[in-house]
Image 1 (cartoon, helix red, strand yellow):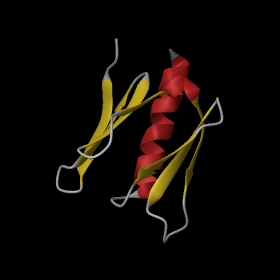
Image 2 (cartoon, one colour):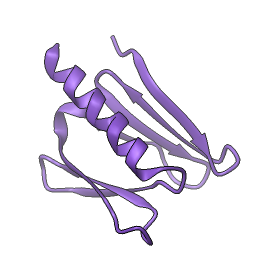
Image 3 (tube, helix red, strand yellow):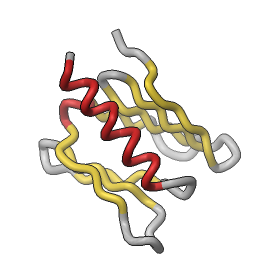
Image 4 (tube, one colour):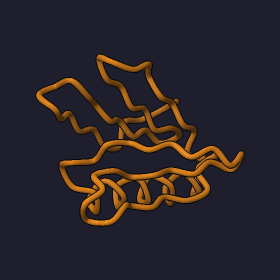
Length: 89
């Protein structure tokens, strides 16, 4: 069963990122929900200081860019922590 590890709403509530023990969920009012199982995350990169996004590459080679105006380093760190916890189980 998934347990919520981290959650952040931003853009005045128009977007929400939730990290569970087994998946990452990104929702906005404008695009469909994006669900990425943690065991399918191959890498996480944050763009240059002028690029307000985090890019997640999956084990299948898909690259998913998530907006991260609020704090790229903090977001990347939270995802990495969740990845480490998921590997322990």
